[in-house]
Length: 143
Image 1 (cartoon, rainbow, N blue to C red):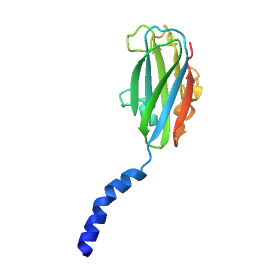
Image 2: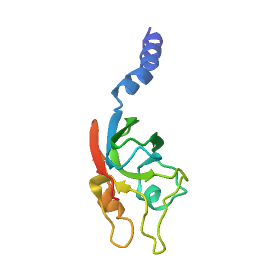
Image 3: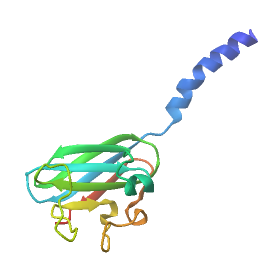
């Protein structure tokens, strides 16, 4: 009897643990999209390494059709924690950020917290934010 009861309880443990895990939703509103031309490239980053190392895969990424005004990207099933978001409007669809001869971006771009860098991109400290529960952020594109 004890063995059967223990076996039954043990078989219920994985579903019980799964139902108590939290999975949050992040909604990223990309505002000030200047035109319908090109694509919006979004990367959700979960660490400073992902932020600074382009070879480190992001937590989530997508390419959306550009739409003048605001474009929204929703990421489901995020673990609570710190994240950062990087966005660019790839107007000519060459899948890279075009820049001028001194390295200034020629295409609209933005980061979470609307962080701005000084002579380069902002720091991870300026970009990161907490996800704990469903979270909405707005990123205004710079152009």
